Length: 389
Image 1 (cartoon, rainbow, N blue to C red):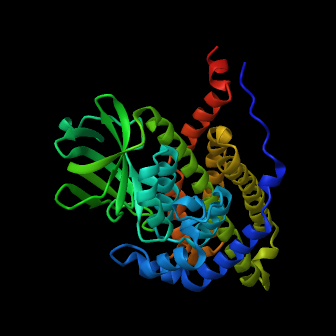
Image 2 (image 1 turned 180 degrees about the vertical axis):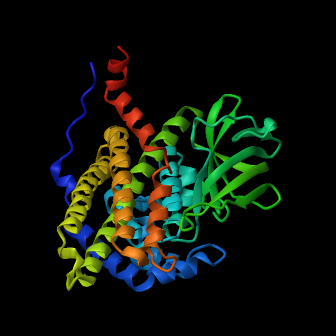
């Protein structure tokens, strides 16, 4: 018999006054400092984002420390407040490494249950002075560095642990100050913290579809590392981190979808054909109504995943899979209409629509495909075994 989890309190799905205020502040912040032209300029810089803006976001608004406990230099809020920031960053197509640093790396440290590692790294994540990411968290990747396959192993050296192997398509892998790595040891997989140095860690930027989310091949060549957490808790920490990442990505996708819909509605109200706004045509209304309906479903799915991440982690695996499917498909639909309903200009390089299309397509496969999420969801709710029977 499948175990039932307690229901989520409906109140946890509604925004608080503080969250609404945070959303308003961030909306104004990104409108002022992170428009489409700003994004294009930032992509041409060595790090791919405005580092001054990154520090302002951490210092003036405190985004980086929202979900970090006060004991580790954060504000002590929950994932619900962080999700507001992620949604607004997705709406503005903010290209700094918020997802790998503040979501993946920070939560991997928290889930590891290692107070020394948390004390060492989380305060610097919270104040914006440390960027971080995770690598080799995909448990399905083979581990055999000697045959040049993907995977990382950890060896015990005279002065500590050393990492060898390769991890590909690591978010912000070429620039992150800290990489949390899932590596194989003689007694099983374990988490390690590595501060990469050029002589022991080669990092090669990958050319990817979405330039606003940089990725890299990271090759560990005897890189010194510090063990984080325990062997017994490593896989649970990795799984929880990835599920939290999926909930975070869903919030980003909702923000991006909201921008696409709002920008398209504004355009069709202004663009005239045959002496009237094209938004008055029934066919255009129907298409935009479809996007709105999909967006409302995505908001509900994302809100549920956010609430689970914040107050009911035992329900997060199911909720994040559902949100990943719904929000990915909504973002794809919203950005397709963003391009098509803008007509010829929507297809040009100068228009920001294509940046959102690229983000939508890359996000759709970032933590697994929609088919993979559906298959996992079926197994989690017991449909997989029933179908097999």
